[in-house]
Image 1 (cartoon, rainbow, N blue to C red):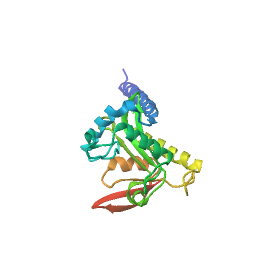
Image 2 (cartoon, rainbow, N blue to C red):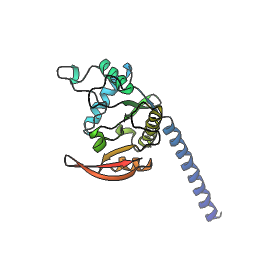
Image 3 (tube, one colour):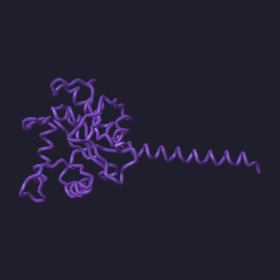
Length: 211
C-alpha cells in the first residue's frame, strides 16, 4: 500500500469533513431571527437577565422601578415602551428611536441586540448605534457576527425610510465595545468596523468603530 497515497486520502477526507462542518455552521448562523419580545418571552428573558448580570451586562434593558415585582417595570409596560421606542413615539427627553430585538435560533433565544437609530451625546461618545450580547453557552459559534450584520442592515433600512432626522441610508454606523473585549472588537472588525479612537468612560477605555 502506498503510504503517501493513504495520507493524501486521509487529508482529503478530513478536509471534506471540515467543509461539511463549516457549511453546517453557516446554515445555523443564517437561521438567526431577530424579533421583538412577546408576552411569552418573560420567563426566558428574566433568566437571561440573571445570567448576564454576572458579567455586569444589562440584557433586557428593563427600567428599574422601586417597589415593583423584581424591582423592574412590569412586563406589559416594558413591551409597550419597546413598541413606542421602535415607532419613535412618546419618547422621554433625550431618548432616541430604537429597537430591542431578541436573537433566536431554532426557537431558542441566543442573545439580543439594541439598535439606536439616532445618537444623543452619550451614545455618540460611548454607546453607539448598536449594542448586542450573546448568551455564554452560544458564544464562539458566529452568532455575534450575524446579529451585528443583520442589525447594520436594519439601521440602513430605517434610515432610508427618511423618518430619522439627518440620517441617510449610506451614513456611517457607530459601534462601540470595551477595549479589553477581544471577541467583541473582532466581531465589529469582521463586519467592516474601522477604529476611530479609544475614549475614557469613567476609568474604562471604550473603542469607537465606524462602519
